Image 1 (cartoon, helix red, strand yellow):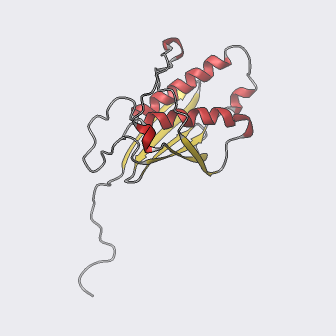
Image 2 (spheres, rainbow, N blue to C red):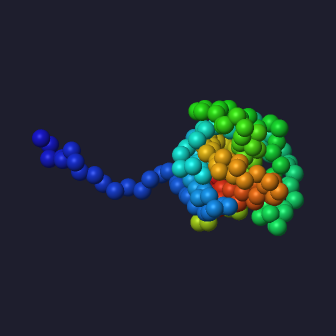
Length: 182
């Protein structure tokens, strides 16, 4: 034996940055977890306590610096001003698919999250990222896991549902921006 124990370990800080946020949105616990890897950014948004569908989102480098429009904010619906998604976003399913009755709304969430990350939209991280984690806009692929709860509200369909969905959408986008590490 060379004097080294197989069980010895040294504590080192992880090079993988992680931020997370939890809120109750319309009575449903919503969690956002963001991890920044050297080659990808992983964002998990769950209201069901699971990863859900995994999708890769990218944008051609030629589109990264194109100007984008901002949608108007709607404070009464907690909807912040957000970048309007580019048609050049490339969305590739990796694992699972959204429920058939929620496919379109999942695409809306994926496109918006893609624009937030790939264009560098939102407040700068505080504290600033260390140089080893600071990458240019769109320089990494984005993987998003979505597990959204639409079923619990299906039986309560009625007036004001579209406003509730807008509030939910705006709240989730705010949570993603709060967890910014890109």
